[in-house]
Length: 250
Image 1: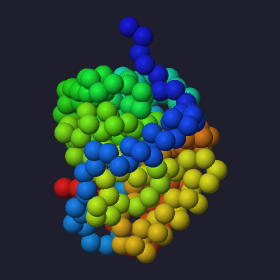
Image 2 (image 1 turned 90 degrees about the vertical axis):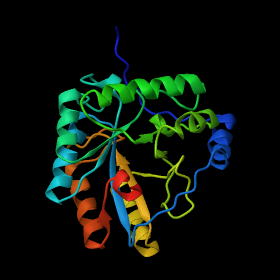
Image 3 (image 1 turned 135 degrees about the vertical axis):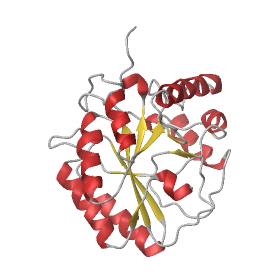
Image 4 (image 1 turned 180 degrees about the horizontal axis):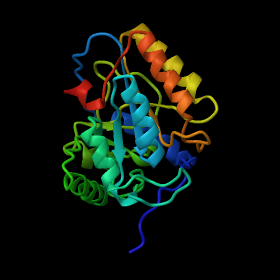
């Protein structure tokens, strides 16, 4: 059977798509009640190209930190624009090293278009594949950042948090079913991440960062190892704790 491949992200730019992404923020909300003190930064990786699993993890581990990896089991060992995707053994090694393994659907499903039943079934299939090697995925990120009322409804009882891709910090009252996150991607990704870390420090808030591939010639959705290392160092220099998503919400 042909394996799914994560397609390059193209947000629905229609009027309907823009309105949907705005309106859905008001629906199926689950207010966060945070217990952390001081600023916190979470480094997260979507889809998990092998460079994110290896170079990304090594940078965090060198700093004494761990990341959250939002995994699509249907992409295991497949080629893609961001390089080969990590396989079961490589994701299992991340878990053994203390990184958090989280869910990103099995087929990299567009949750903005799929119906509630399809979203739930695809997420459950992914969770089954991850638990088969001992992972316990408790958190989720929407593929492409595409959210819908039916997605929030389908997933809110399955996961402790659902992460999107609109920029922002997380504070008490933020929606756990549509958490903001800041991309470390593109030419301005490093500077943007630094700015949001500074904002989190000023607010005493939590900021979630995300990227994909971590290599010297990254895709427009990734970053270089040097850039990621500088961002990690900046977070620590500003006095922010680096925690996985699960650690912050435990």
